[in-house]
Amino acid sequence: MKALLSWREGDDGLPPRQRILAMAVLMSGSLMAVLNINLINIALPTMARDLGVPSSVSVWIINVYQLMAAAAILTFAALGYRIGRYRLYIAGMAVFTLSSIGCALAPSLPVLVGFRVIQGLGAAAMMSIGPSLYRVIFPSRLLGQAMGLTAMTVSIGVAGGPALGGAILAVADWPWLFWINLPMGAFALCLAVRALPFEQGRRFPFDVLGAVLSAVALGSFVIMVDGFSRGPAAGQTLALLSLSLAAAVAFVVRQRRVAHPLLPLTIFTEPRFSAAALTSLLAFIAQSMAFISLPFLFQNVQGYTPLASALLFTPWPLGTMLGAPLGGRLADRCSPPLIAACGMGVLIVGMMLLALLDGEAAVFDILWRSGVCGIGFGFYQAPNNRELMGSLPRERSGSAAGVMASVRTFGQSLGAALVALVLSGIMFAEPADAMPVGLALWGGALAGAMACGLCVLRTLHYRRTQAVFD
Image (cartoon, rainbow, N blue to C red):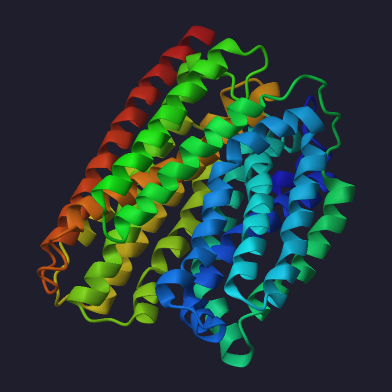
């Protein structure tokens, strides 16, 4: 934290004290957005019972939030240029906070789902705009540390969400899972008005058709993966996949022809940016394959309860909390691709160790191997995000943030689809067999190995570039 307050001659970004206040705003926004998935996950059975709906229907309380957040990411990233990131981030945080009131007071599932749609849009605004503001808030020499703190904040939400949700449900009803957003959101809003850097929007036409196409492409893909993971229906899966691909192709064609594109495709001509985005895609495929497949091992094979299964994951986000700040600090001093490659190597080792678990594995064996994965992922994530955000000019940071969020969503969804493909018709036929989960974990390790190899190639390119400048 002392380093983030430091100042040097020629530094860009905000003054040190305002820098910390702005960082507190962005960390609060990230924490609220992540907590609202992990808090609600553990409460779904209680909410289904109180609202009088089947458990299979109650999952839309989670799904619709994630769907809206995924579908609107690129739209809000582009709107940040149009109306100004200051206004859009504050508006997103206000919408998110106020819609929490509607969620808490909802008398029925349809009303609750409706307010979750609005809440997901608020979360999308914060997630798509927040990362780009780091380029304005912090000087380039501290960007890695800022990214590390952000990754740590997300990990706190992942690790603490189930425990906090369980604690709230132990003393209060489920609406309090939404009421707790009010004090945090109100405080962050007051701080945001004062601390976030103000900027004017730019007067140019907004690509409405591009926004619709991006939402259809991302949204239909997320719906397809969710349905596929719950029991694939060939006709529906093919229809949604076709819709997603058609919308994606139309989106690319549109972006090439329109004068003011939603996503300038020229940013992908920067090799560092494209390589970092592809690395991020592979890394989130690997992480998602572990997150989706391990519960089957813990519950179907080893016999743990859903709550105990969630607790067995805790070392992963805790490890990320430890690894991300250190990786970000090193990335500000050394080659970011090299640090990312080291972290990805540790993640691969951790996933291989998890793949070797069997039905008789001791709790300690599960915990320490999961912790290795978390440390590796955190050590990788902050340097890679630093490279992704820092490789483009500052005026393109909004587009970079939109791509970063979209790649994360697409990678997580693709990883879930691959796990469903591996487990479909196998796990449920042999519920005591650990082999299918092992195959999924080995597949995740393979995706991680591809990401690690890409990081190594980027490291060689980074050294050649530095040698040219020297």
